[in-house]
Amino acid sequence: MSDNAFTPDTLNEKLSAVLINSGIQPRLKGFDFLKDSVRFALAKPDSLHSLTKTLYPSVAVKHSSNSRAVERAVRHAIEVAWAQGKLSNLNRFFGFTVLEKDEKPTGGEYIGLLTELMKNYL
Image (tube, rainbow, N blue to C red; front, side):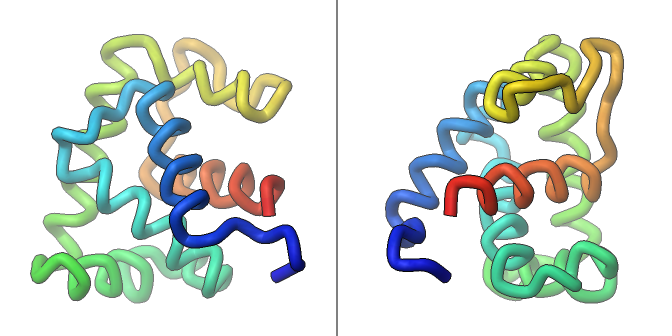
């Protein structure tokens, strides 16, 4: 990481702001799972190619859960945000269209987008 990299606190704040603006509320389990998934993906980029074997199990261990529960909670958080029509707010952070209003990303796609967004701020 560069000298101007996020500290863990500022990364956490930025991720929280992006998730909340995208319609994913802190009351959802998927909120914390998504934040930890992005942090893990930033540390180990190859994990984005192996969600069910690497990323989700790693997040599950941290939360004393299992990978199926992590995947389900992430999927539920995305469903809630999509139903509210707020996922397309993610486009503002990128400055261009990454998601159309009627386009619902998979958990892996959403984690990948968030990870890329956070890399741009590093």
